[in-house]
Length: 74
Image (cartoon, rainbow, N blue to C red; front, side, top):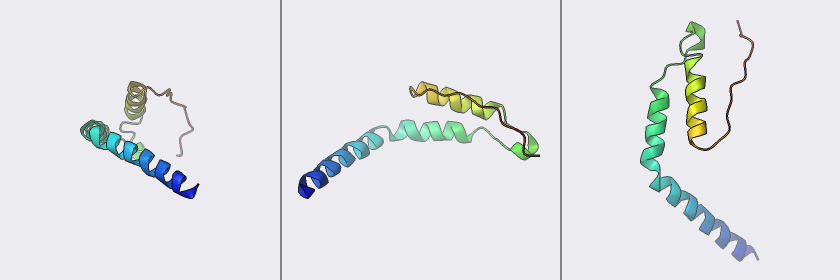
């Protein structure tokens, strides 16, 4: 039983790591696109734009996403 579970987990992890490697360039490009957008709440830079960007990125991946307003910490 333990051997079967370990083999199953190893097989599933191999599939996951293979998928990550296949999509590596896409994942890196997505990260670069995100990092290009400044978001500095103390200076009110990108505070509205970056959430919109992240929502679009998540929706492009097939996820449901929406922004929730919060109270300013100031």
